[in-house]
Image (cartoon, rainbow, N blue to C red; front, side, top):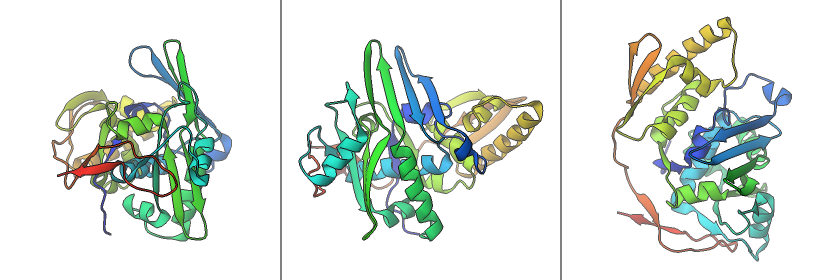
Length: 301
């Protein structure tokens, strides 16, 4: 499979919020809802609220969209005039301090998105992506900093069934991370594609949000379990979770991470140092989305 994207410049808040993405049992989406609050830094907390919980499939799709927005995103201004930009802005529903913030739009074929996240083109995968887009577009994000508040949907999207054309607008928090206006977490997509289970993928994103390339951290096994299953469990459940977490650690080793159990259930995890292969991106102008897509970035050779 031919991949063009190398990495995503992701927002740490979306990577680190415990329980935003989690391992789900069959049928659990029908029984549960999403409502988590995460305290991020000094004086900031964010709440994510949705009709359904988000799983590893949603996380993987969002990683692909954030990665696509790097080289191919265009800004969505607060007052667009064309039909599709207006729809995207309305569905994004920015409020309070976010009213005048830009979103970041990705326009591509749905099949390209499938390919970049490592999914084969099939009817089942197309249905999975469509359901995920609806699910994430219905998640409300509320950010409070001291006495200030901003809210918006996690994303908005417009999909044309007739030709497979997809427009996705990422929320302002994600947009600022992609554009380099705030610190970001770098997630390498070849590593993501090299992982084969949901627990490994969930653990990988959380660790990427915490550990920079070439750096290391110390963490307990039960903390790693919490990256995958945020709720408490019985003794029997914890034994099973630790087993799955150890298997996920082995997958991290297989993609080049150094993982050493230096004491019982205590791990030293070192992320490999690596340069970006191909092209990285920087913002060069505030090109706005008017219905015809032109890039807001140019490559840095």
